Length: 143
Image (cartoon, rainbow, N blue to C red):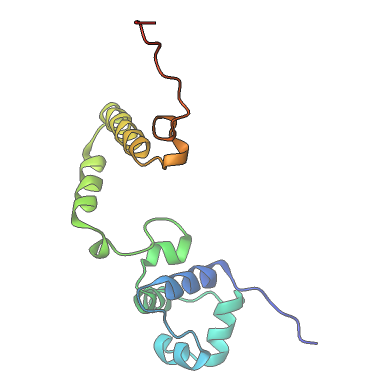
C-alpha cells in the first residue's frame, strides 16, 4: 500500500485559497502543471514539501488562487489582495497604521463599545428578558 504523505503548509494554504474564492479553482495535476509551468513531478514534490518552489512559482500560485504571495509563502499578512477589500475597511486600516499606540488604544475602546452595543441590539427574543416577559416588573406604588 502506498504511503500517504500529507501536503506541505504552503500547499495547504494554496488549497485553502483556491477552494475558498468566488469560483473554486481546478487543482488537478494537469491544470497546475500548466498554470505553474512545472512538470507533474515537480508539482507533486511542491505539494508534499520535498521541493521548495522559487518565488516565481509562488507568485503564479498566488495569482491562480487570487491570494497574496506573502500569506501563501509564510502564512503572514492578508490572505487576499487589498484590491478586493471594501474601500471603507481599507481606509480604516490606513488610518490605523498612521495612529500612535495611545490613539490605537482609544480607537479599540470605541470599537469595542460600538460592537457590544450592536450585539446587544441583536439579541434574540429568547435571550433577552425584556422581550420574553421573564423580567421582574417594578412594584406598583399604588398597592
